[in-house]
Length: 153
Image 1 (cartoon, helix red, strand yellow):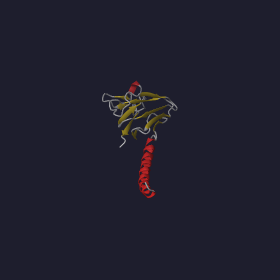
Image 2 (image 1 turned 60 degrees about the vertical axis):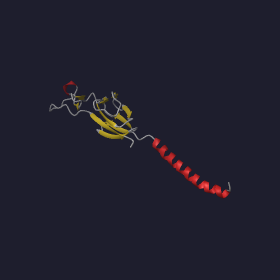
Image 3 (image 1 turned 90 degrees about the vertical axis):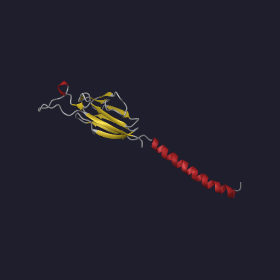
Image 4 (image 1 turned 60 degrees about the horizontal axis):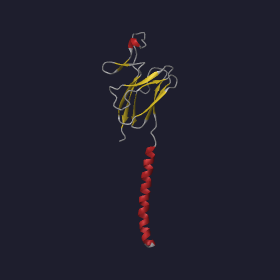
Protein backbone atom coordinates (compact mmCIF):
# COMPACT_ATOMS: atom_id res chain seq x y z
CA UNK A 1 0.00 0.00 0.00
CA UNK A 2 1.44 3.35 -0.98
CA UNK A 3 1.61 6.37 1.31
CA UNK A 4 -1.12 8.20 -0.65
CA UNK A 5 -3.48 5.20 -0.31
CA UNK A 6 -2.73 4.96 3.40
CA UNK A 7 -3.75 8.63 3.90
CA UNK A 8 -7.24 7.86 2.57
CA UNK A 9 -7.67 5.18 5.24
CA UNK A 10 -6.26 7.21 8.12
CA UNK A 11 -8.94 9.94 8.01
CA UNK A 12 -11.96 7.57 8.24
CA UNK A 13 -10.20 5.50 10.91
CA UNK A 14 -9.55 8.63 12.98
CA UNK A 15 -13.21 9.65 12.65
CA UNK A 16 -14.40 6.23 13.82
CA UNK A 17 -11.89 6.23 16.68
CA UNK A 18 -13.02 9.72 17.73
CA UNK A 19 -16.69 8.66 17.69
CA UNK A 20 -15.89 5.60 19.84
CA UNK A 21 -14.00 7.74 22.37
CA UNK A 22 -16.91 10.18 22.54
CA UNK A 23 -19.42 7.36 23.13
CA UNK A 24 -17.20 5.85 25.84
CA UNK A 25 -16.93 9.24 27.55
CA UNK A 26 -20.71 9.65 27.63
CA UNK A 27 -21.20 6.15 29.07
CA UNK A 28 -18.48 6.71 31.67
CA UNK A 29 -20.17 9.90 32.89
CA UNK A 30 -23.53 8.11 33.27
CA UNK A 31 -21.84 5.57 35.58
CA UNK A 32 -21.34 8.27 38.23
CA UNK A 33 -23.90 7.73 40.95
CA UNK A 34 -26.67 10.33 41.20
CA UNK A 35 -26.67 12.71 44.15
CA UNK A 36 -28.50 11.56 47.27
CA UNK A 37 -31.78 13.21 48.23
CA UNK A 38 -32.31 13.90 51.91
CA UNK A 39 -35.45 13.68 54.00
CA UNK A 40 -34.99 15.49 57.28
CA UNK A 41 -36.80 15.04 60.57
CA UNK A 42 -36.47 18.53 62.07
CA UNK A 43 -36.85 19.22 65.77
CA UNK A 44 -40.53 18.24 65.48
CA UNK A 45 -42.63 15.26 64.40
CA UNK A 46 -42.63 15.45 60.60
CA UNK A 47 -40.63 14.55 57.50
CA UNK A 48 -39.25 17.40 55.35
CA UNK A 49 -40.05 17.42 52.55
CA UNK A 50 -43.28 15.45 52.73
CA UNK A 51 -43.07 14.32 49.08
CA UNK A 52 -40.04 13.88 46.83
CA UNK A 53 -39.38 12.53 43.35
CA UNK A 54 -36.18 10.63 42.57
CA UNK A 55 -34.87 8.50 39.73
CA UNK A 56 -34.07 4.80 39.81
CA UNK A 57 -30.64 4.39 41.41
CA UNK A 58 -30.75 7.69 43.29
CA UNK A 59 -30.14 7.25 47.04
CA UNK A 60 -32.61 8.63 49.57
CA UNK A 61 -31.26 9.35 53.05
CA UNK A 62 -33.42 10.05 56.09
CA UNK A 63 -31.69 12.11 58.82
CA UNK A 64 -33.20 12.60 62.28
CA UNK A 65 -32.36 16.00 63.79
CA UNK A 66 -35.01 15.62 66.51
CA UNK A 67 -34.28 14.78 70.13
CA UNK A 68 -36.73 11.82 69.91
CA UNK A 69 -36.39 8.55 68.04
CA UNK A 70 -38.54 8.16 64.91
CA UNK A 71 -39.06 5.36 62.41
CA UNK A 72 -39.31 4.84 58.66
CA UNK A 73 -41.95 2.20 57.95
CA UNK A 74 -43.12 1.30 54.44
CA UNK A 75 -46.85 1.37 53.80
CA UNK A 76 -46.82 -1.92 51.88
CA UNK A 77 -50.50 -1.64 50.92
CA UNK A 78 -49.51 1.09 48.42
CA UNK A 79 -45.79 0.44 47.99
CA UNK A 80 -44.95 -0.24 44.32
CA UNK A 81 -41.28 0.83 44.39
CA UNK A 82 -39.88 -2.16 46.26
CA UNK A 83 -38.25 -2.38 49.69
CA UNK A 84 -41.40 -3.86 51.20
CA UNK A 85 -41.35 -4.47 54.94
CA UNK A 86 -39.08 -1.55 55.83
CA UNK A 87 -39.28 -0.81 59.56
CA UNK A 88 -36.19 1.09 60.70
CA UNK A 89 -35.59 3.24 63.77
CA UNK A 90 -33.94 6.63 63.27
CA UNK A 91 -32.09 7.29 66.51
CA UNK A 92 -32.38 10.77 68.01
CA UNK A 93 -29.82 13.49 67.23
CA UNK A 94 -28.44 12.32 63.90
CA UNK A 95 -29.71 8.81 63.19
CA UNK A 96 -29.73 7.99 59.47
CA UNK A 97 -31.19 5.43 57.09
CA UNK A 98 -30.63 5.12 53.32
CA UNK A 99 -32.43 3.35 50.46
CA UNK A 100 -31.64 3.05 46.76
CA UNK A 101 -34.65 2.19 44.61
CA UNK A 102 -34.05 -0.22 41.74
CA UNK A 103 -37.32 0.25 39.82
CA UNK A 104 -40.01 2.91 39.35
CA UNK A 105 -43.02 3.17 41.61
CA UNK A 106 -44.31 4.86 44.74
CA UNK A 107 -42.93 4.39 48.26
CA UNK A 108 -45.32 5.71 50.94
CA UNK A 109 -43.85 5.65 54.45
CA UNK A 110 -44.70 6.74 57.99
CA UNK A 111 -43.34 6.89 61.54
CA UNK A 112 -44.93 4.12 63.62
CA UNK A 113 -44.45 6.22 66.78
CA UNK A 114 -46.38 9.18 65.36
CA UNK A 115 -48.94 7.67 63.01
CA UNK A 116 -50.77 4.43 62.40
CA UNK A 117 -52.70 2.96 59.49
CA UNK A 118 -56.49 2.95 59.51
CA UNK A 119 -58.69 0.22 57.99
CA UNK A 120 -58.06 1.68 54.51
CA UNK A 121 -54.26 1.65 55.05
CA UNK A 122 -54.13 5.45 55.28
CA UNK A 123 -51.90 7.08 57.93
CA UNK A 124 -53.70 8.74 60.80
CA UNK A 125 -52.56 10.28 64.07
CA UNK A 126 -52.26 7.52 66.67
CA UNK A 127 -54.85 8.90 69.06
CA UNK A 128 -55.10 8.00 72.74
CA UNK A 129 -52.93 4.90 72.29
CA UNK A 130 -49.78 6.89 71.68
CA UNK A 131 -50.61 10.32 70.36
CA UNK A 132 -50.14 13.64 72.08
CA UNK A 133 -53.47 15.37 72.50
CA UNK A 134 -53.56 19.16 72.29
CA UNK A 135 -55.84 21.41 74.36
CA UNK A 136 -58.59 21.11 71.67
CA UNK A 137 -58.65 17.31 71.83
CA UNK A 138 -56.83 16.79 68.50
CA UNK A 139 -54.11 14.21 68.12
CA UNK A 140 -52.23 16.06 65.39
CA UNK A 141 -51.17 15.23 61.88
CA UNK A 142 -49.77 11.78 61.15
CA UNK A 143 -46.03 11.73 60.49
CA UNK A 144 -45.74 10.31 56.98
CA UNK A 145 -44.38 10.97 53.49
CA UNK A 146 -44.13 9.62 49.96
CA UNK A 147 -41.37 9.03 47.44
CA UNK A 148 -42.12 8.78 43.73
CA UNK A 149 -39.45 6.86 41.84
CA UNK A 150 -39.13 7.59 38.11
CA UNK A 151 -37.50 5.28 35.56
CA UNK A 152 -34.33 5.93 33.60
CA UNK A 153 -36.21 7.20 30.52
